[in-house]
Amino acid sequence: MITDKLKKGYLLIAEPTIIGDLSFNRSVILLADYNEEGSVGFIINKPLKYTIHDLIPDIDARFKIYNGGPVEQDNLYFIHNIPELIPNSIEISNGIYWGGDFESTKELINKGAINNDNIRFFLGYTGWNENQLENEMESHSWIITANSYENKIIGKSATHFWKEQIMELGGEYIIWSNAPENPYLN
Image (tube, rainbow, N blue to C red; front, top):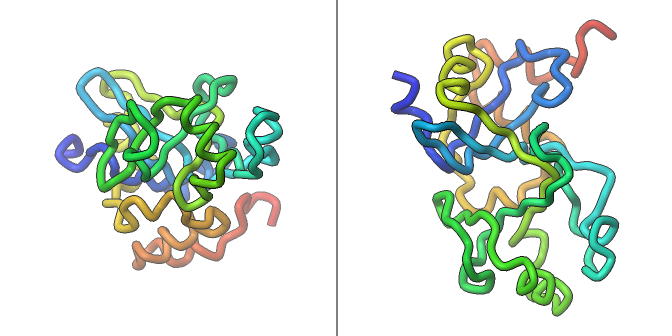
């Protein structure tokens, strides 16, 4: 049963069949919340051209901002692996935390106490209503896998992350790992 496999902290890897979907083509999503009412996740491999300093000039850092998903793209979200420094964080799993006190976070970044391996910022998130993710799973839009990187996924390079995940799956997926992003343009 699909719901037995879906858990907070797991990764959703876009099936190669999602070609043409601008938001999700070649996406890897960290599932931040999953329950009977719906799900929330963050696309972890789609950096934008912005840094945190571009969006919040009083933060003296150049951490990349990622496209977290198509929902609420005017809001900034973050995940991190330092709950002892950022109060009011919510544990996702495996030492990965969501949010927390943003004023404290800004101060810690400006003091140099937080680096790229500790935190990742997103504009927007990915959300599913009740049963929507399960329906997408049944239509083979996503591949579920455990997050073997645990909290080190935060510092993981996004450049070839989807390709790496597809190659790890092996078998029929290997051919897709070297396919162009849009085969129609080939």
